[in-house]
Image 1 (cartoon, helix red, strand yellow):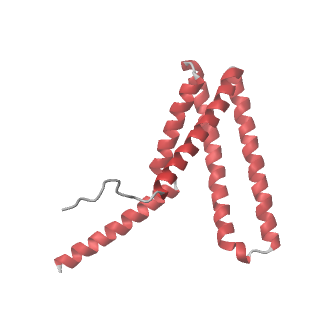
Image 2 (cartoon, rainbow, N blue to C red):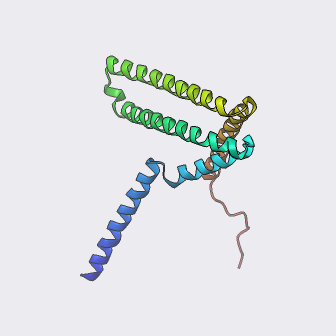
Image 3 (tube, rainbow, N blue to C red):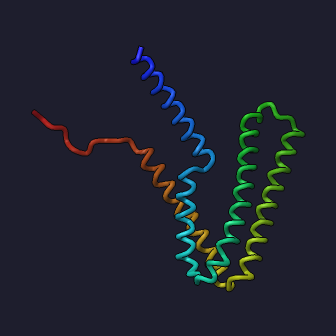
Length: 166
């Protein structure tokens, strides 16, 4: 009886832990936090902000990121909706989703314009350009690392040592 209870407890714990990890990933979780921390450090190094510039820049950047995160959540919801309903979707619904995607793109552009206008007020133009460059470099580095991880995952494991002969 005790063995069954222990086994049942282990199964419940395993299932609960797995769903917690999945939920954490879907909400961003530690991986998103790790990337964001690396991005902040990278931007800081690349932009060479003074203490005063950093004090004014980071709150604006944080507000911009909050806006982008909200837009990304909405876009993910729509992607899921399309994935689930594409086969049975009528033209009216499909056109509404297309219009919504275009509106989201416009909102993202508008958020970027507002962000750039706000940082232009507190940073020299050269540092705004440094932000653009740093953002592009970071995205490129992130993509390269993801490609390397995928490449490693795709390689079959093999033993390079010759087999021992007895």
